Length: 181
Ligand SMILES: [Zn+2]
Image (cartoon, rainbow, N blue to C red; front, side):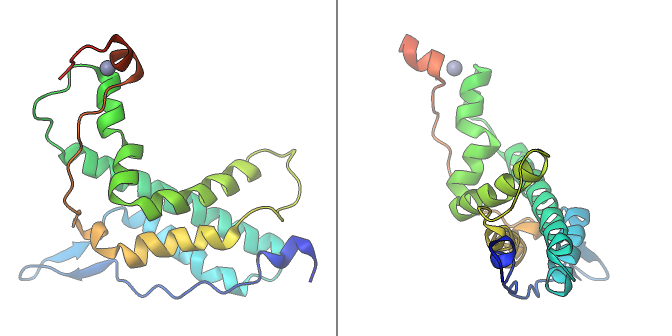
């Protein structure tokens, strides 16, 4: 096995979390970001049967894109449910306090760490000058997908961990050393 395919030689852990489940009475609960979830998991499952490294790489690319999209969607959902009290007057302070990257790092630090592998793969493949994939952590992309859809399966049904977001000043307000509470 050459260096090109070394990092494709693994089998993703099976994901058995469900996307639909019984709700109250006759209702059915549908996981949030169901389209991204379905797309990601379909590619996740086809990876191992890829006939060559190109097929495997294209599965990994779809897993990265669809998982990242679901991740972003979920963080926006959480963000939209946070009540600002008191309201943050400066838009940049709001971003440093309640931006989706801040929310992800605070509530889901492992997700934030694994997302870097998806970003690296997407960035690499989006630039045609880049050659070879030996330096990419492909398994990390699958770990990212597994972590979101299996280990955080409850999040897709709206269960969000409790947390507070202490007011963090943006650079400008911090430099002014004014009290922008
Ligand atoms: Zn500010």
